[in-house]
Amino acid sequence: MTANETVTAYYDAFNRKDWTAMLNLLHPDVRHDANQGSTHVGKALFEQFLQHMDECYDETLTDIVVMTEPSGRRAACEFVVNGVYKKTDGDLPAATGQTYVLPAGAFLEITDGLISRVTTYYNLPLWESLVLGKN
Image 1: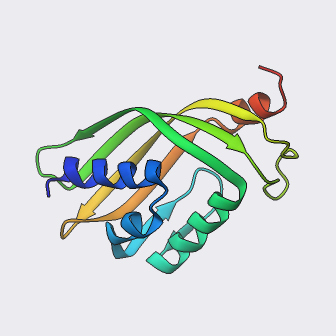
Image 2: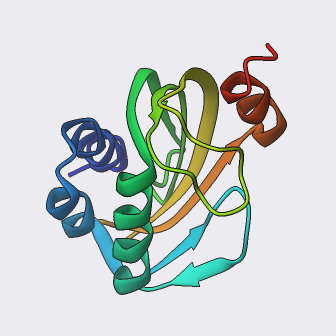
């Protein structure tokens, strides 16, 4: 698969909530740079992250645009997160089933046909204002 096809398949699997398919597209030593927090390396830690996110959030991505550079080693993706906040996540605001629509993006690296880095960005203060009903 091309980098574009790999990234597209990854986000398609996300929207289907097919975590196994997502994990199958990841390099064993995937580096995950979450928006807030530290960097984690390896599929096992990424799988733990997915499980946690699935417990707390129900999200679907729309308006997905994947961009790749000529070598096929790097990609960027812009999308809109349409979500439901199901369960309170740590010290974030209390979850009461709030819905939100939030622009976000990601940078990805491809190694040996698999995603070896996922760096995701979104505006956390905007998300908090959305779930608190202040925006």
